[in-house]
Length: 416
Image (cartoon, rainbow, N blue to C red; front, side):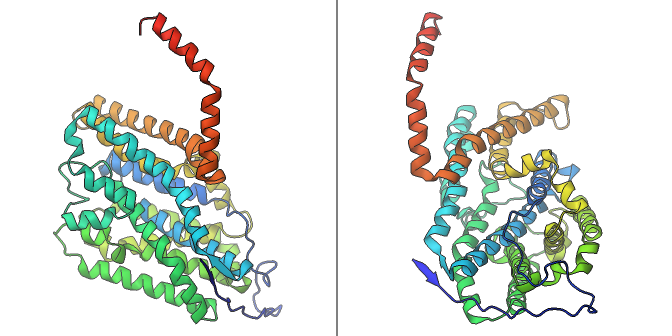
């Protein structure tokens, strides 16, 4: 099914020389190349989530890292879809969804398949409600299943293996529905400004629903998990993509913006850090504007990465940040089951030396497993597809049969 729609193309209007001007090549659409520095932004987001889950009191608002991911995802997905519309005049939706499956499923399925037997070996108590959890993880419905079951993200007495999969559910539901809505939006509107307003309007409705449905002193899981009440970060990313993909690059292609974007980025980064240090699950402001503000600051950080090289862009391109950011998806999926399993396997007193050792071990195992998953599972499937990567894996495994036989003989001789 290829959905065909003609995107309205605004006329190219050249700004007069005395107008304050635009950045060089302002009359052209933004280039379609890789946006340098986004991996660094992803790294900051996953680091915040890791700190929050390893020691919440050190960064009580570290869960805002998830909202950074939401804005980045909304921006990137919409930019890719608009680029395809502009290039081909239509969207190949099955192809888009297959690409998403190749990106998301390998690591997700491996986490579920590996974590369940390991958790059972450590303690069967870890498998309470595992059927519902696994179903939610594999069908991207975790958030709604947990809402209907009345579980709590913030005050769970028995940590769930896949509690972190709620955000994957929100994103995948967005990936399924947004391309269809985008076709309708592009067909019904003729300019980027209108589309930006529509996206921001949807974001405002979602954030408003979160604020209205939140009740101080009560558990906030419903408004935190709900796609309806937490989609605003994705829609803010959509609005940024509409603006950036517009003719002449929108407001983020002006010379004035390029002169100030490094300073804006530093202020936005400081603001986001302050929110993570001060907001918490028990703060009413978190759900009544705090998460929304974090999403808006993230949009400014992304906008600061658009265009020519800048000091902020170079900061976000530091090799360690890029390495972590490229593997952030796997790190996000693996870290929580590993923390839960190690906590159960090695009980320790809070903030004791043993506690810190277990936390360090959880972090090390997470990075090792995520790196292996990225190298030998996620990237092959993403680049070659399911069938080809499986065929090559079988071929490589079969070619090592002599080595396997030799290893088996050696272990038998050793009495192992």
